[in-house]
Image (cartoon, rainbow, N blue to C red; front, side, top):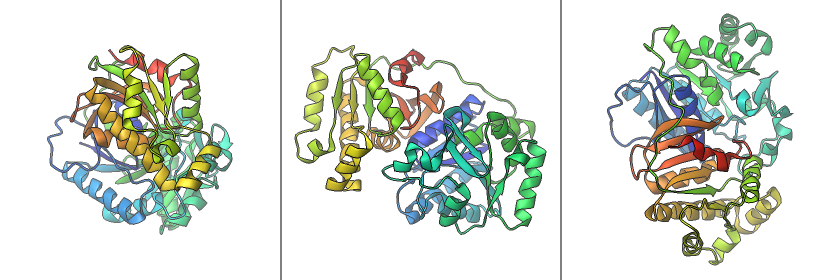
Length: 422
């Protein structure tokens, strides 16, 4: 293994694993830090998916260091800390504290932070993060229920949560290519900057950044930052060949279902599209869970009433106003936990009833489902939309899972994804 990756949520880990696989690294994804040693064979990269984005700083750092220790013990020479392409965090963390701790732990004095992901509309210019051409603070992420992003300047955002001095590598350097970027890194280091925000607008920029950064012990960013690493490792002789993945994945021929827990604009649009196309649907309301009128038995009774070849959609997603109302009455943590626990229990019940192909929308929901199913290791399959592949369990029940970040995917994602399975 050449590259060990630590992701702060499950769907982000899958997104990164897809990027590495698509670019030619043989990649596995682990759900949480493995509790035992394993033979990785010819694996080039392992991505460990944590649930550390919104937990306490102490716990996020502890988990991340444990992940880095496991990866290092299994041969990783370079490390990548992956977070959301919209830099989801608060003034307390967890991006800054984890990056600081990993730098200390790996005895490194410099890294970069680049969440740019042009394929999904995330770009950085003059240190400012844009989402589909709109400054981050003016995008729907402004009202994210857990990590509202009210500042577009990543230098300010990161400086508030990091003990490191934050610098910046500007577009003018990035646009000149890897040599200019490497020179800018040295200049920033000499200025005392330990972490630098790096501008990037196109995939070509990310490839050049990858070339310049491939020798660093630690890189941080979104999945886009990985786009140039496989080729850079090949050019440096760190790997012998690239291994592009297949365009389709063979999966068990069980029943299909969609579970959506994200309240993002993208997921809500996908729900509307699916309903308009006639998919049978069941809305799970946190108030109904809380008062006992919506239970596992209620939902499973509805599922049992459908034809075996139906594609059911079960969702808790709602608009920001209703989410705010729910959180005000039930509490932010309780309302989220109610939905997560129901979806997790539901996933177990569905697998018992022969559902082996699932789309799960939302990072928190995906994490709850995978944990409930006991899926510890995932094989990365074909890309459905940028940032979202099919995966297949390598431990636990035999299931095919598309674990979708709430913000990702085209409007027709829920209906077209199945074409990638055979």
